Image 1 (cartoon, helix red, strand yellow):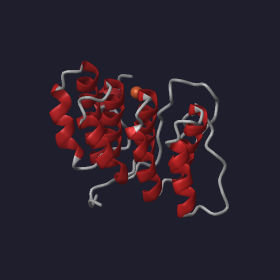
Image 2 (tube, rainbow, N blue to C red; image 1 turned 45 degrees about the vertical axis):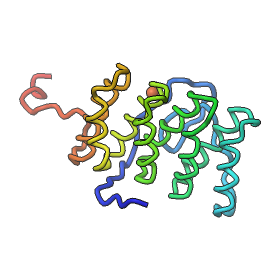
Image 3 (cartoon, rainbow, N blue to C red; image 1 turned 30 degrees about the vertical axis):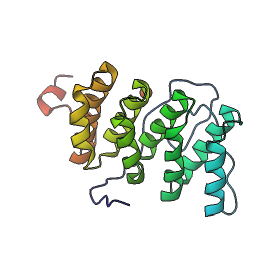
Length: 192
Ligand SMILES: [Fe+2]
């Protein structure tokens, strides 16, 4: 596993999912489309593996797979993040892969960075999924993401190009240690 010495944890997120199917306020202040599966007494490795297989089980309803996804997000351990990353290879649903990238943007874990970079680099992937991977990389602010965000600012897909521009702005903010995303200069602030 690569080292992420430059990783910076975000203390909160303000993202709100746009596709509200089921109102469930999460630990991330978002309204998730499905509630996480219930917490277990024993948050063991066995549980993570069970959640991982539910996450990827094509025979389960998408709603249940989303519940496994949000439980893994809320666990947030390295093992849980690596389990979530397997969902980026879902063979059927771009929406599902997009949602995995979205929760990685919420989670801001350095362990998701290699999978997100692979996703953004994969030009066969749907633009919507790559867009979300770019934004997650911007939110995480890992050092190794800058180069790839710059590279794909010239992607042939407009949504990817624009997402990389926005993500690099987010990335610079995350690296800067500023308290506000858009800092209003003092002389402008006094006229508001
Ligand atoms: Fe999105």
